[in-house]
Length: 307
Image (cartoon, rainbow, N blue to C red):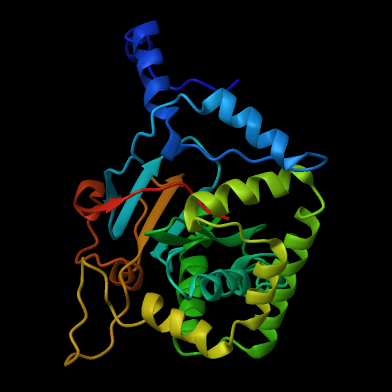
């Protein structure tokens, strides 16, 4: 039932033998997590799973290094009426003890109608209809992304205000009230999702795969409400403050500089010029738009997203 992506040429190369080989590679003991929720008898589930999957080889969990996007600016012209933008930033991964603090900081910044970016850029300034921040997290790496769509002539003001709000976050200007609102929103979302049997199934699968144990919604809620403002500010300082990425290592003897960001603009971008502040934030040295130059690559492993 999943969609198939590819060109006619690449899909034509798929044969039953290739599909079967891939099936055998995936269906191996160390790559499988079997979960049952609801009105089940554990002993019966274990017996059925053993009978069905017991003869499968143990195998090894796959790991590979994937190309990672660094900092810079990319312009992608498309026949849209507006400019769609995504500003990306390295973030606290799931293996980081401050992972939940990073999630709460992203929530306070741009998740929901009471978030800082929504209030400042939409409600107070009326510059765009919607703007939001989200995190894409894995066990070993993560990204904070801020995205929205805006009329071309308003883009410079939106980017200026967006970078300004990130600067305020870098300067420890996240309040206790913002943190509590973010925690309340995340807690409410978890509580609502917990009512669904399917949500419990997915939570069990993801936490077992990523953390090697089941993490209940109650445990997550307790940890969310235990996050301190100091820990949130620590995340902001490391990931939004002094440059510390592989592309720009931190020099303890130099003045603080910002971790370079990745900005992708698509839509009505032909002939678009960006301010020096934007290029500086993204590690660019000139105003020449060259997508190939702006993207730098580094090795990292890419794993399944967690709960």
